[in-house]
Image (cartoon, rainbow, N blue to C red; front, side, top):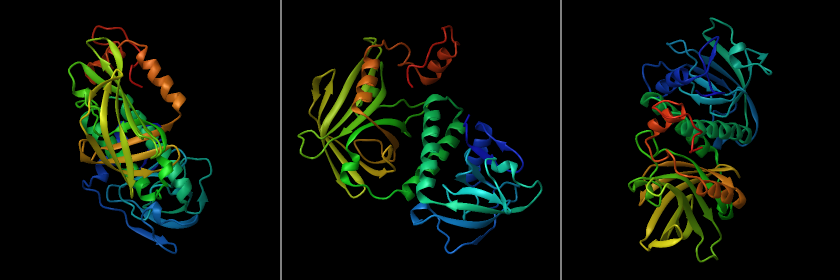
Length: 356
């Protein structure tokens, strides 16, 4: 279920996996006949990075051959998905339909039943649009970590995450080098699925009886001997304990790409390896709160999309300490089996999820 994300197809605003799956399938092509668009504005930007000021535009949006408008909007009528109306961009705020102000109503309550096209008045503002999409992305990624979906629904949600991430990448400006400094918690990785557990950059997720349950990164300035660390908490089934694995090394910023070069791997505080591990990634500094990372390859998963959220050192220490103080329980079991146990199926008592 996707609270706050709606498919606008007429009178009703649908929420839930079914409506979301429908939108995602249209976004991938299918048999959708794209809507015809007429735009009355000074210029037709196609992504938020082209927006230099707040502007109010009037866009004529027509239904497709299937009768759908082909857009998703959030609870504030901000466009969060677009499979057919090229003049609308993610982040546009719809404020009026056919001259009637929307106010605090949802868009679906303002559409006149039976009309084949509508005149949308939208506010196009880069900063506000990016903030709205950031909230959508955080919500989608949280749901991806919490819910177990059928493969088709999971693929549809991944398509939605990819769509919003690309919109934010198109919007974001370059960041100063010191913007990356500090602690970052991994909130989402496209390399993780019900069938594929998170192996982690340390690689301990591939060890028998082990699962990487959390990852953090810390970037410090270049004067430090070690200026990048990737810390992962590993659930070890054989010892029934959580253990910290850490890669330590140096990083450099080259354009929008970060190169991480690690020369020390530690497990439970002891040196395990001095082999070199390199991760090249294209970074997008979305805001003070989140950054997006697209792994380019070498020793990591090529093409992986990651979202990191900034945290304080105190927050990281508290989270690591909480994990180290608890037994492993069911964390090393397959995700579908853990989900059944958490719901009270499979012969075990229901329990709180061990992986937030």
